[in-house]
Length: 243
Image (cartoon, rainbow, N blue to C red; front, top):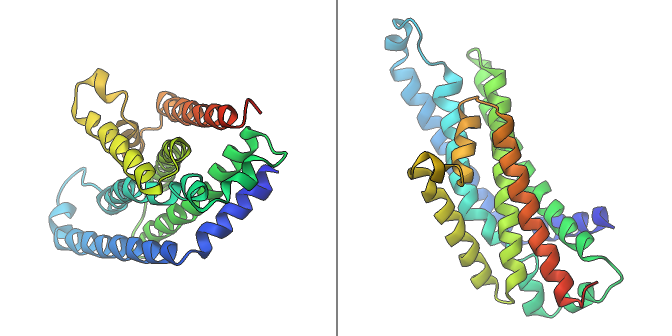
């Protein structure tokens, strides 16, 4: 049932004209930034060649590209998650799903998985763009994979947060702004002390962005996602009378 709901949500998201507009704008921004970073790198390549431990193309181009995508996903994902539950409530279609003989866990995980498939495609496109650097130079495959993991975990975290806010209200705009405000607040924590930074998803992503794969960072994302999905499931169960 989770797979069926996930496929339904993915098709619904992918079929929406607004999704194509957002994806087109996202790809334009990423492509422009990617080409700009390549141009900057080529201009200083002669100077870098004279350095003993010069940064390579991967750390100079691919990592900043992933950083830009991380910021864009923070702003983009709430626009997707507001449609998962809040918009269904506003349109009156949520009653059909909430009264169906499907558990709250299956509903939440199905919607979450459907969105995650779409986000995975976005991240994969970004990774393929970075891999094209291999056509002209050597790339750090480990750093590319580390960024891929970091982006996927960060996107899943924002998706879980957005889904929770979508379950809180029947107004899609309220759900989107609520999720964006909290996401931005968590992003701002990255500028605080070490103890405060530990609460920020972006701080943990930054470690993966530079190739530092730590079990602590992965565990943080896993707990963050599990907590928010658990809260969402609890909300849906309460709404359905404990079912």
